[in-house]
Length: 179
Image (cartoon, rainbow, N blue to C red; front, top):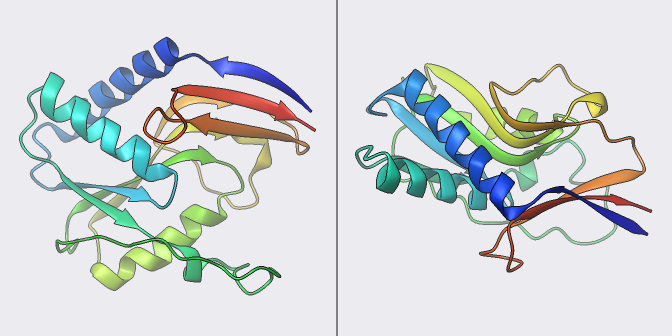
């Protein structure tokens, strides 16, 4: 198994600031916009973006939720191991709000399809956008594209993209792992 660094901590920081600026350009004060981190890995990215927007760009308090899609996935009954759900934490109404789904890697598009179904339990958003740190563009099974992307990666099927966050793995980095 080999591992190649795709993004260093410095590059991740630069990309996070660029994504934050792109969000500000489109959503200004975030009064009608909600960030939703898709559990489990999108939460780290969503929290980091919220922190950058509020502390470094003085954006007023941004609503942030976490969405668990475990039981909305089309493959959740096809696994031999028992699934462990994560926590959904959406303490606000999404009705007529602009929702930005946030995830670390866009691969097949199935997680986003599941999130689209799951969010309907909390109301009908006026608009839904997608922000991802890594877009694996040649791996899509569904016609889903991100509105905001940190980096596009051309990885083939036996390669895996792993995002490490300092809150979880002790470092900010993105790796391409080949078996």
